[in-house]
Image (cartoon, rainbow, N blue to C red; front, side, top):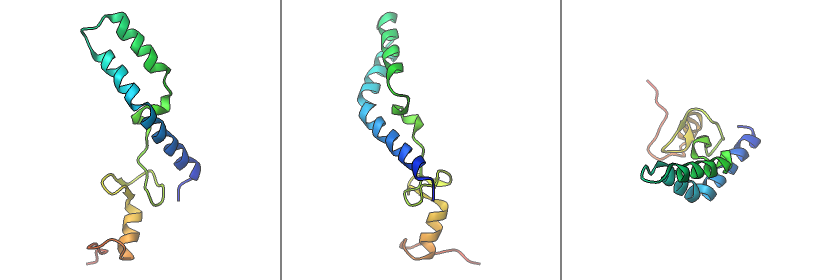
Length: 101
């Protein structure tokens, strides 16, 4: 099990990303628009820099929904490889069995 503080910090980041997503998208659209004046684009860049760092999508860490483990997480399932194996061994995932040869 991962540290609960790390899991909570990641949840806080997810909440901030949702809160500032529209604002960030609008500012990025202004910044990338080459038809606007340089001063307008620069002002948008300054506004973007004033937003919280944790409101950026890149700062979210993929974590296991079961254990909170940050490494070895399958994106599609949102479960770590270890939790997936435990669930498969105990028969909680239909159609999946532990391999043996």
